[in-house]
Length: 206
Image (cartoon, rainbow, N blue to C red; front, side):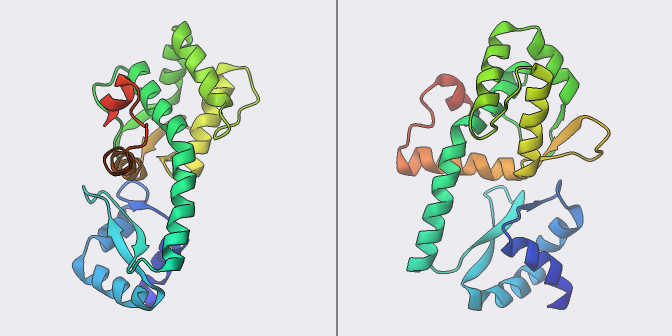
C-alpha cells in the first residue's frame, strides 16, 4: 500500500480528486485494482472510495453509517447547506454573464477578465455580484468590482471548485467538485425537499 500512501493521505484529508485537479491520481483511482486495494486498506477505518454519478470525481465515504459516521456527515451536510445559496448564485451568475446554455461542469474554462468586463457593462449583474461578494462565504470588504471578482474566484479555488493552472495567468478551470456539488443539490431537492430551487434560474441549473 506504500504506493498509494500519498493518495490515501489526500483522500483522508477530504480531498476531491478529478481529472482536472490531478490527472495521474484520477487515472489510478479509475482502475478497479487500485479501488479494491484502497478499499481494503480503508475498511478498518470504516471508510471507502466513492465517486459521483458521472464518475468524474473521487472522494471518501463511510462503509457503514455508525453513530459517529452519522454525526460527522450531519456536520458536513450542515456546512454544505450553508454554502449552497452563494454557490448557486455564483453558478447562475457565471452562466448568465458568459452566455452559457448549461451549468458549469468539470473541464470548463473561465477567463477572469472576460467575466469582469461583461459584468461591468451590466448594472444588474454588478449589483448581484456585489451582493454575492459580501456574503459571509466570500466575505469581501472591497467595493471595487475587480477585487470582488478576484476574491470570489480565489475562495472557490481554496475550496477546490476551481483550478488555476498558472498563477500569473487569470483563467480558471472548473474541477469535478462542481459536479459533486450539483449532485448534492439534486439530492437535497429530491430527498430532503429543501428550498434550493425557489427560482426558475436555480431550477434551470439542475
